[in-house]
Length: 595
Image 1 (cartoon, rainbow, N blue to C red):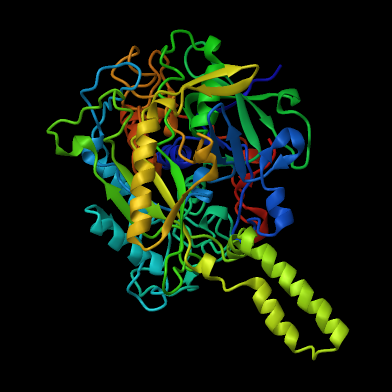
Image 2: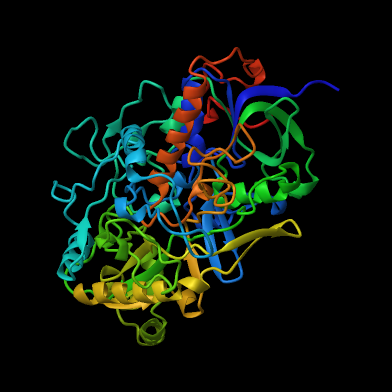
């Protein structure tokens, strides 16, 4: 039996943790193999038609290898991404830094408590590095062609009227190139490290389709930035590869077992033949669910791993609501990126000298949050109008009656235009409506486990009910200040929430009794094994967590590289796995679908 392939570093997952670490290790001269279960999404490949979107979900045992992975647990739902670039493909581009006081440090260990062994100061240089790489820009609301998004101003004004702060948050979106005046649809030049897709990109065209995947390449997603740079430095990016097992090697390092998905194949993942690759360092960055599932599933192979594994799950306090009936000109919800404004509601720790988490005694009733506007694609306006079933039904009956009467009486056909216009309605509902997205410091008391080979999460969000109740009231106050009416997400009425920011389960701590990993991301008792994604967070980030995860991963890699600044001689992956020099643009030149 031949030897396994070997790489200095294997990275599992290509989201904010995986992309950053793959780049940092590759740029330092290490051989890097990145395993991504999903496929690549060049500009122009994201689903838009009903048929495409219906098939755009991740369930490989049913032959589905799409972008969205929807999880349903006992008391909540979650939506995450499956594709090269991870969550950056479907997130709303916001790169906010975690608030300094929200790095609570003096809380005792136990249920409901969070204690961050790192501070804002520890992450500052890494925040800056990520912001530079992602080319963050703010929505240019005062520039020509950018004034139609009325919701930007209204939410900001409403927040300030209620005594909160508000801003246009930094976005990983290109509005203007190289400091030039923002112009929708302008060409974006290729960076020095190239682009793995080989397709042209243009500046933001304000279509509101960010969360479905940007078909214009306007989002500075990880495939356009960190992953392209990693490939430039020799990292092998392998799509359709899903890690399944972790085994420590005698003498150090790890063997990673993985399967290769064939698009269209309906074979159950558990029945696919496993292949293996050896590495000196293994970085787990498969997203919170993927990473924790891997660790729990392979717990027996990792003796001495912390009993905290699977603890401190948080949904980052995510809550979705809707505003309707805002009078005046249209809000412009379909003419802008998804998020343009962030209202910050203060936290109880903001006024204290040292941040202190109360362990959830009040259910988070005084914990801070961010509330942001949300745009959506133009075609969604038709869905909003169609949802007005009470008025819609009467319009349909009236229109059908007039059509029949026109046939019987022989009225001129030009009357049909008025009938159709009445059928469609005034459009006021969609023009005065917008979603609100909220997130904040919920109570991280969720417990993750694997039963019957399925990931389970219990005890969330039960302890955070007071937090969610307060959040709903704040959203209602903002809606009223905007002149509209607030509506809860229907699932919230069923005591369920939806998160797009799952965090925790392999949280950092000061030792093996308080966390699974140390402040540098390394698993206690298992040298060379790292957790670099949202699973590492010991509690909610509060703000959109992507930037904090990326900064944490950058710090992790820098610390690891300091230990061996002069890389040892390594074996580069065989030629069949190395990036190809040239390829047709449509072929994803540096991606490897098969092993």
